[in-house]
Amino acid sequence: EPEVTQTPSHQVTQMGQEVILRCVPISNHLYFYWYRQILGQKVEFLVSFYNNEISEKSEIFDDQFSVERPDGSNFTLKIRSTKLEDSAMYFCASSGGVEAPSSTDTQYFGPGTRLTVL
Amino acid sequence: AQSVTQLGSHVSVSEGALVLLRCNYSSSVPPYLFWYVQYPNQGLQLLLKYTTGATLVKGINGFEAEFKKSETSFHLTKPSAHMSDAAEYFCAVTLFSGGYNKLIFGAGTRLAVHP
Image (tube, chains in turn cyan, blue):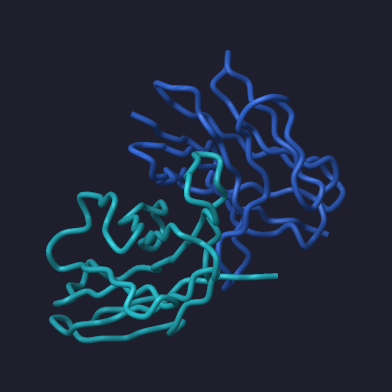
Protein backbone atom coordinates (compact mmCIF):
# COMPACT_ATOMS: atom_id res chain seq x y z
CA GLU A 1 0.00 0.00 0.00
CA PRO A 2 1.38 3.45 -0.89
CA GLU A 3 2.58 5.49 2.04
CA VAL A 4 4.08 8.84 2.88
CA THR A 5 7.68 8.64 4.04
CA GLN A 6 9.72 11.19 5.96
CA THR A 7 13.41 11.59 6.67
CA PRO A 8 15.11 11.84 9.03
CA SER A 9 13.07 10.30 11.81
CA HIS A 10 14.92 12.42 14.37
CA GLN A 11 16.95 15.59 13.82
CA VAL A 12 18.95 17.34 16.50
CA THR A 13 20.25 20.82 15.74
CA GLN A 14 21.68 23.86 17.43
CA MET A 15 19.64 27.02 17.78
CA GLY A 16 20.14 29.29 14.79
CA GLN A 17 21.00 26.48 12.39
CA GLU A 18 19.06 25.68 9.25
CA VAL A 19 17.25 22.38 8.94
CA ILE A 20 15.52 20.70 6.03
CA LEU A 21 12.90 18.07 6.68
CA ARG A 22 12.12 15.78 3.79
CA CYS A 23 8.97 14.02 2.75
CA VAL A 24 8.03 11.76 -0.15
CA PRO A 25 4.27 11.99 -0.64
CA ILE A 26 2.16 9.29 -2.25
CA SER A 27 3.10 9.34 -5.90
CA ASN A 28 -0.17 10.35 -7.58
CA HIS A 29 -1.20 12.89 -4.94
CA LEU A 30 -1.42 16.56 -5.81
CA TYR A 31 -1.89 18.28 -2.45
CA PHE A 32 0.75 18.42 0.22
CA TYR A 33 0.74 19.58 3.80
CA TRP A 34 2.97 20.10 6.80
CA TYR A 35 1.69 19.90 10.35
CA ARG A 36 3.55 20.02 13.61
CA GLN A 37 2.93 18.78 17.14
CA ILE A 38 4.77 20.33 20.02
CA LEU A 39 5.11 17.80 22.83
CA GLY A 40 1.89 17.60 24.79
CA GLN A 41 0.00 19.92 22.44
CA LYS A 42 -2.35 19.62 19.48
CA VAL A 43 -1.35 18.75 15.96
CA GLU A 44 -1.30 22.13 14.18
CA PHE A 45 -1.58 22.97 10.51
CA LEU A 46 1.43 24.78 9.07
CA VAL A 47 1.03 24.96 5.31
CA SER A 48 -0.66 23.47 2.29
CA PHE A 49 0.92 23.29 -1.17
CA TYR A 50 -0.51 22.68 -4.62
CA ASN A 51 0.74 23.20 -8.14
CA ASN A 52 4.13 24.34 -6.92
CA GLU A 53 2.88 27.09 -4.72
CA ILE A 54 1.63 27.63 -1.21
CA SER A 55 -2.15 27.60 -1.10
CA GLU A 56 -2.54 28.44 2.57
CA LYS A 57 -0.30 28.96 5.56
CA SER A 58 -0.92 29.43 9.23
CA GLU A 59 0.30 32.19 11.50
CA ILE A 60 3.03 29.82 12.68
CA PHE A 61 4.47 29.64 9.16
CA ASP A 62 6.48 32.85 9.26
CA ASP A 63 9.44 33.98 7.15
CA GLN A 64 11.69 31.42 8.82
CA PHE A 65 9.79 28.61 7.12
CA SER A 66 9.69 27.65 3.48
CA VAL A 67 8.48 24.69 1.46
CA GLU A 68 9.59 23.33 -1.85
CA ARG A 69 8.94 20.47 -4.21
CA PRO A 70 12.33 20.37 -5.86
CA ASP A 71 12.12 17.33 -8.07
CA GLY A 72 8.55 16.12 -8.48
CA SER A 73 8.80 13.51 -5.74
CA ASN A 74 10.22 15.15 -2.63
CA PHE A 75 8.45 17.80 -0.59
CA THR A 76 10.63 19.69 1.86
CA LEU A 77 10.16 21.99 4.82
CA LYS A 78 13.06 24.33 5.57
CA ILE A 79 13.50 26.24 8.78
CA ARG A 80 16.13 28.91 8.17
CA SER A 81 17.22 29.74 11.69
CA THR A 82 15.83 27.35 14.25
CA LYS A 83 14.59 28.47 17.63
CA LEU A 84 14.10 26.44 20.77
CA GLU A 85 10.33 26.66 20.31
CA ASP A 86 10.60 24.94 16.92
CA SER A 87 11.24 21.68 18.74
CA ALA A 88 8.32 19.48 17.75
CA MET A 89 7.23 16.50 15.70
CA TYR A 90 6.69 17.56 12.10
CA PHE A 91 4.25 15.57 9.99
CA CYS A 92 3.96 15.63 6.24
CA ALA A 93 0.67 14.65 4.60
CA SER A 94 -0.64 14.30 1.07
CA SER A 95 -4.05 13.93 -0.51
CA GLY A 96 -6.01 14.13 -3.74
CA GLY A 97 -5.15 12.14 -6.79
CA VAL A 98 -7.50 14.16 -8.94
CA GLU A 99 -7.55 17.78 -10.01
CA ALA A 100 -10.72 18.73 -8.18
CA PRO A 101 -10.06 18.81 -4.45
CA SER A 102 -12.72 17.91 -1.98
CA SER A 103 -13.08 18.41 1.71
CA THR A 104 -13.76 14.70 1.94
CA ASP A 105 -10.30 13.80 0.63
CA THR A 106 -8.33 11.78 3.12
CA GLN A 107 -4.96 13.16 4.09
CA TYR A 108 -2.34 10.45 4.44
CA PHE A 109 0.31 11.18 7.02
CA GLY A 110 3.93 10.22 7.26
CA PRO A 111 5.52 8.91 10.47
CA GLY A 112 6.93 12.31 11.36
CA THR A 113 10.32 13.87 12.03
CA ARG A 114 11.11 14.72 15.60
CA LEU A 115 13.08 17.97 15.60
CA THR A 116 15.04 18.84 18.72
CA VAL A 117 16.60 22.30 18.91
CA LEU A 118 19.29 22.73 21.56
CA ALA B 1 -14.30 29.18 13.18
CA GLN B 2 -13.94 25.43 13.35
CA SER B 3 -12.63 23.79 16.51
CA VAL B 4 -12.54 20.38 18.12
CA THR B 5 -12.65 19.41 21.77
CA GLN B 6 -11.74 15.97 22.99
CA LEU B 7 -12.89 15.25 26.51
CA GLY B 8 -10.35 13.26 28.47
CA SER B 9 -6.69 13.33 27.59
CA HIS B 10 -6.29 9.81 28.97
CA VAL B 11 -8.78 6.95 28.95
CA SER B 12 -8.08 3.55 30.47
CA VAL B 13 -10.20 0.46 29.87
CA SER B 14 -9.92 -3.25 30.48
CA GLU B 15 -9.47 -5.64 27.62
CA GLY B 16 -12.91 -6.58 26.34
CA ALA B 17 -14.58 -3.47 27.71
CA LEU B 18 -16.35 -0.79 25.73
CA VAL B 19 -14.20 1.99 24.36
CA LEU B 20 -15.76 5.47 24.23
CA LEU B 21 -13.67 8.45 23.16
CA ARG B 22 -15.48 11.76 23.11
CA CYS B 23 -15.26 14.49 20.51
CA ASN B 24 -17.27 17.67 20.19
CA TYR B 25 -16.86 20.11 17.37
CA SER B 26 -17.71 23.67 16.58
CA SER B 27 -18.35 24.62 12.99
CA SER B 28 -20.24 27.36 11.22
CA VAL B 29 -20.77 25.12 8.20
CA PRO B 30 -21.67 21.44 7.91
CA PRO B 31 -18.55 19.69 9.11
CA TYR B 32 -16.56 16.87 7.72
CA LEU B 33 -15.18 14.90 10.64
CA PHE B 34 -12.32 12.46 10.98
CA TRP B 35 -10.80 10.18 13.56
CA TYR B 36 -7.10 9.40 13.26
CA VAL B 37 -5.05 6.98 15.35
CA GLN B 38 -1.37 7.25 16.15
CA TYR B 39 0.47 4.15 17.31
CA PRO B 40 3.81 4.64 19.05
CA ASN B 41 6.51 5.89 16.70
CA GLN B 42 4.15 5.92 13.75
CA GLY B 43 2.26 8.53 11.77
CA LEU B 44 -1.42 9.37 11.89
CA GLN B 45 -3.65 6.74 10.33
CA LEU B 46 -7.23 7.38 9.31
CA LEU B 47 -9.73 5.32 11.31
CA LEU B 48 -12.91 6.68 9.77
CA LYS B 49 -14.53 9.80 8.42
CA TYR B 50 -17.95 11.36 8.19
CA THR B 51 -18.81 13.38 5.12
CA THR B 52 -22.50 13.13 4.27
CA GLY B 53 -25.21 10.49 4.40
CA ALA B 54 -25.37 7.85 7.10
CA THR B 55 -24.52 9.32 10.47
CA LEU B 56 -23.11 6.07 11.85
CA VAL B 57 -19.74 5.54 10.26
CA LYS B 58 -17.78 2.31 10.48
CA GLY B 59 -14.02 2.32 10.31
CA ILE B 60 -11.10 -0.01 10.56
CA ASN B 61 -10.30 -2.31 13.48
CA GLY B 62 -13.94 -2.47 14.65
CA PHE B 63 -14.27 1.22 15.47
CA GLU B 64 -17.30 3.29 14.65
CA ALA B 65 -18.48 6.84 15.27
CA GLU B 66 -21.81 8.56 15.16
CA PHE B 67 -22.33 12.09 13.94
CA LYS B 68 -24.93 13.83 16.09
CA LYS B 69 -25.64 17.28 14.78
CA SER B 70 -27.93 18.22 17.67
CA GLU B 71 -25.15 17.46 20.14
CA THR B 72 -22.30 18.63 17.87
CA SER B 73 -20.59 15.37 18.69
CA PHE B 74 -18.67 12.65 16.88
CA HIS B 75 -17.79 10.14 19.57
CA LEU B 76 -15.69 7.10 18.74
CA THR B 77 -16.67 3.69 20.08
CA LYS B 78 -15.58 0.08 19.95
CA PRO B 79 -17.62 -2.62 21.67
CA SER B 80 -14.68 -4.64 22.94
CA ALA B 81 -11.20 -3.25 23.51
CA HIS B 82 -8.12 -5.17 22.47
CA MET B 83 -4.61 -4.68 23.77
CA SER B 84 -3.55 -3.58 20.30
CA ASP B 85 -5.95 -0.62 20.49
CA ALA B 86 -3.60 1.19 22.88
CA ALA B 87 -2.67 4.35 21.02
CA GLU B 88 -3.43 8.05 20.78
CA TYR B 89 -6.63 9.03 19.02
CA PHE B 90 -7.25 12.36 17.35
CA CYS B 91 -10.57 13.82 16.27
CA ALA B 92 -10.37 16.38 13.47
CA VAL B 93 -12.61 18.61 11.41
CA THR B 94 -11.73 19.79 7.97
CA LEU B 95 -11.89 23.35 6.82
CA PHE B 96 -12.34 23.51 3.12
CA SER B 97 -11.43 26.94 1.95
CA GLY B 98 -10.69 28.11 -1.55
CA GLY B 99 -10.25 24.58 -2.77
CA TYR B 100 -7.72 23.48 -0.21
CA ASN B 101 -8.11 21.45 2.91
CA LYS B 102 -6.64 21.81 6.30
CA LEU B 103 -7.38 19.60 9.25
CA ILE B 104 -8.08 21.09 12.65
CA PHE B 105 -7.26 18.59 15.35
CA GLY B 106 -8.36 18.05 18.89
CA ALA B 107 -5.78 17.63 21.59
CA GLY B 108 -5.90 13.85 21.41
CA THR B 109 -6.90 11.08 23.79
CA ARG B 110 -4.42 8.46 24.86
CA LEU B 111 -6.11 5.08 25.25
CA ALA B 112 -4.61 2.51 27.59
CA VAL B 113 -5.92 -1.06 27.58
CA HIS B 114 -5.29 -3.25 30.62
CA PRO B 115 -5.42 -7.04 30.72
